[in-house]
Amino acid sequence: MSGLVLTVRQAGYGLLTLSRNPRALVFGVVFPVVLLVIFASVFAKGGDETTRFQGTDIPTDAYFAAGMIAYAIMFSAFSNTAIALTSQRESGLLKRFRATPVPAWTFIAAQVVRAVALVTVMTAALLAVAHFGYGVDLSVEGLLELVVFAVLGTAALCALGVAITAITTTPDSASTLAPFATVLLAFVSGVFIPTDQLPESLVEIGRVFPLAHLAEGLQAAFGTGDAHLSGHNVAVLGLWGVGGIIVAARTFGWQPKAAAG
Image (cartoon, rainbow, N blue to C red):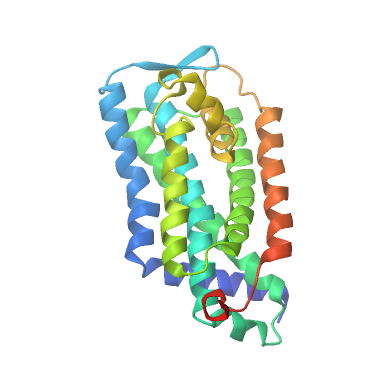
């Protein structure tokens, strides 16, 4: 059986396991949709309000639709990956898998495929809610830009999710640290609160991390006029992704850490 088939099968098992996890379903699937409805209602008030973004005004509904997509990507690719790998490692599943003839790389690749599949579903759901519920439209150019940032963001955050397992020694620590980091960064990255309403110091802190650049790239895709692919945002996401891969390659372990400690 080819490595590609093994990867797809393992990703399918991962999605099946995820579908049976109430926490993952609530925070990764239901929560972004609920937040979009809440923020669109509070900030846009069902009207034609706009939000200042990169020197221009974009519809507030569109701004938050892009922000919720960014949040869904980080939760699915970063938080879920970190929690799933830590839980599987500490339960001994990774150790048993490593002892099989199946190539080890297929297991990690399956985590990425699982995240991409979940992100695709969530993005489609959020776009549907934004379009039919709030009249948010996306140009062809904007859609292409959204795809670029969604794919790059998912890959980079998956790599970081694998990397952070080096310090999450128990499932509880992973379930605390990864979602906490996701929510905390969402507040300073223009996801939950527009950047023009945040103190400049918090905006600058947020821009150190990848979520701000993912959100900004997705929000730009919803802007009026020609879509512009920000080379800076692409570069920052790429650097975080490469850094995550390097750390993961050096620190990822198949043996339970809690037992070893």
